[in-house]
Amino acid sequence: MSTFTALPLTESMIKNLGTMGYDEMTPIQAASLPHVLKGKDLLARAKTGSGKTAAFGIGLLHNLDVARFRVQALVMCPTRELAEQVAGELRRIARFKHNIKIVSICGGVPFRPQQISLEHQAHIVVGTPGRIEQHLLRGTLSLKHLTTLVLDEADRMLDVGFEESIMAIMDHVPGRRQTLLFSATFPESILALSRRFQTDAEHVSVDVAH
Ligand code: ADP
Ligand code: MG
Image 1 (cartoon, rainbow, N blue to C red):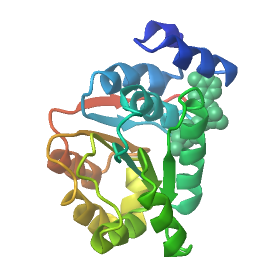
Image 2 (tube, rainbow, N blue to C red):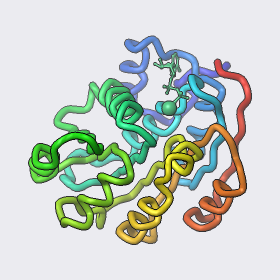
Image 3 (cartoon, rainbow, N blue to C red):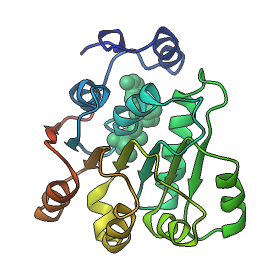
Image 4 (cartoon, rainbow, N blue to C red):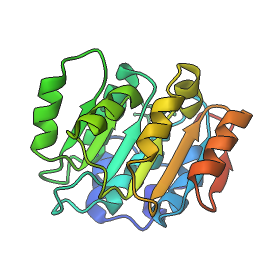
């Protein structure tokens, strides 16, 4: 097991992780974070409960420029519940960063409050592909300044039928970006997604949970 101090993170990040009880990295975090922090594309496989959120979240938050009020990172999740969980975990990891704004936009809830949140500028958007696509089509969300894109639980997103929305969203993101793809399984459909949207991706696979 290695501790977070092995990574090139700020002291305030490491201190905050300590207050969360995160001292040692989980295996997927130890395998992923060095690549994520270097800005590399990553295709990562690990099962539920292995700490995937922090495996990408610590990297997103480390690379984020709070002074730039633009959406710099987008995290896509298969369900509203998972998106809310990810947004909550990102807010906890970012607690030491003042004025950071993380907005979650998912289907099944009214459109207007989300639009107002986005108008007030967000640094990170977390949501489900269908509603993200709708905001892009309405012009209430811009991803022109995106630097990092995360597909979380990518196999489940394909299973629930979000492939078309994901493809549509990809038309709105800059070509030069970091793309992180997390999945519990690597079926051919996921490998195809990686070939299509990632560049020179590092592959990591972890079987144990903690
Ligand atoms: P996954 O996305 O792989 O299902 P999560 O990111 O939801 O996993 O994390 C699972 C649980 O592990 C959460 O309760 C989280 O707070 C905890 N956790 C994550 N990383 C660490 C760590 N380095 N040390 C201790 N607990 C952790
Ligand atoms: Mg998860």
